[in-house]
Image (tube, rainbow, N blue to C red; front, side, top):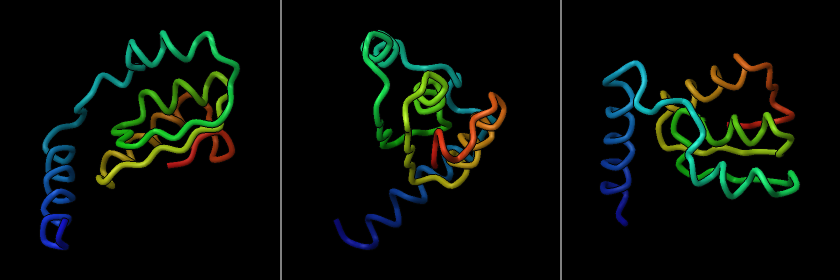
Length: 94
């Protein structure tokens, strides 16, 4: 991928999140919940975390979670979602 292509991808996702107040539901993905709820909490990396639904859910259940997204708007929403349920940077990092 060239630098121009990388910039285009970043601009696409930033525009996508900036175009509305919320892109996703904010709830955990059904498959993530079904798989993770029976596991002992550990460490999780959520690539493309969007507004943080999965990462916040995991962290609220004791997982040490890191969420990564190309969109700073999405990451800010994820941070807000985490704070709204009382999670701090020791539980989930974006």
